Length: 130
Image (cartoon, rainbow, N blue to C red; front, side, top):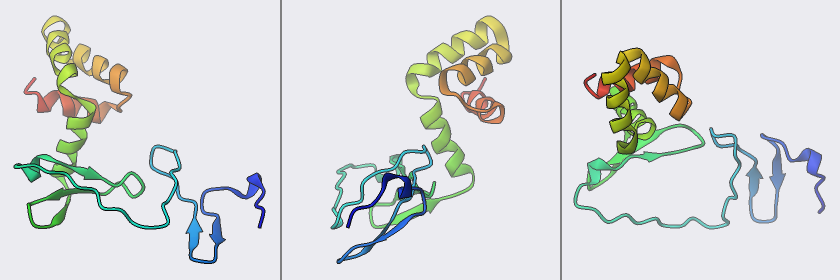
């Protein structure tokens, strides 16, 4: 069966012989292909709690304790967001901007570099102890 491109919109549902597929976007606005079969993704580590897993469709954030996955909620999600929006490379620049121009300069730099909103930029600066 041929499907017209104009019908390929978020939320559209298509019935195939083996399954029903719905077009769902990621929070980034992108769409990704769905495989016919599930796959295992393996990450080997001695420190499982240092890793965060983000579902880009639902926005849920998960961690692993070595035995099972657990959702990260509340302040834990802010820590994950800050780790993503303020990577180590940016920390040094933010500290220098803070020393040279104060908190406002550091917040402006964070917003410019990451596209974050004001509360998230302020939180990221505070998380650095500035």
